Amino acid sequence: MNTAQQVESKRNAGYHAAGMVEDGMVVGLGTGSTVFFAMERLGERITDEGLSIAGIPTSYQAAIRARQYGIPLSSLDEYPEIDIAIDGADQVDPNLNLIKGRGAALLREKCVCDAARKVLIVVDPTKMVDTLNALVPVEVLPFASASVSRRLEALGAVPVLRDGVKKDGPVVTDNGNFILDCEFGAIPNPQDLEAEISTIPGALECGLFSAYGEKIMVIVGEGKGCRVVSLH
Ligand code: 5RP
Image 1 (cartoon, helix red, strand yellow):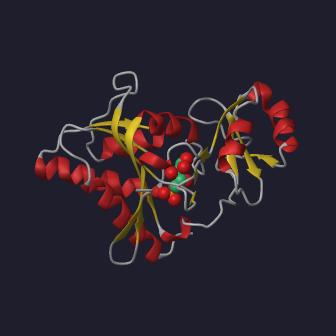
Image 2: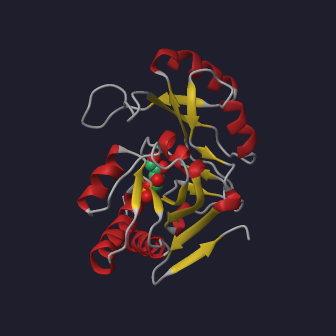
């Protein structure tokens, strides 16, 4: 449940990120409630300033919302290199390692993050932690969900198949796969864990983003403005 203060923080972060977008840019559009505010402001800039951009959505949700805000959309096929991506996160550690995927969009989000020259992560202050410890979502091929689950258990996880809301049975991602939410406890070495998970056949992607700290700028929305965190 978002408090009014959290919503205000998310708005401030999203608006700040939208202000960093320049005319002519290709913009990755992440998924989730904080990115909505960035899209809202981008829509206003398109109307008010004639800002011209192409958005690359990371989910059906992002595409639907972007259309509502009048943001022209394109694809990763059309633009395999992206100028700037704006996305949310579930947790951020001091080295700018992330956990993402509450919205089950992690696979496309990581593709877009990887293709982007610069990545703006928009969060409220509750997302900033000393050590990552949230559930790590893993997108799995349905065919291999039991075998992937066993391999994740061997890495110390307690994987739980994510169930749908207003749908019986498992969540089916935008890519037609399942999600295993994995409780690992504290994750002091996210790079090692992400590397281990990436070796499991049928584990298509996990919500640990540990390779992008150098190009990430975290915009932490606060009550009256924003705090910007980067490694430089
Ligand atoms: C979706 C995500 C979201 O970006 C993340 O869950 C943050 O969402 P919100 O901005 O609503 O808190 O990773 O897969």
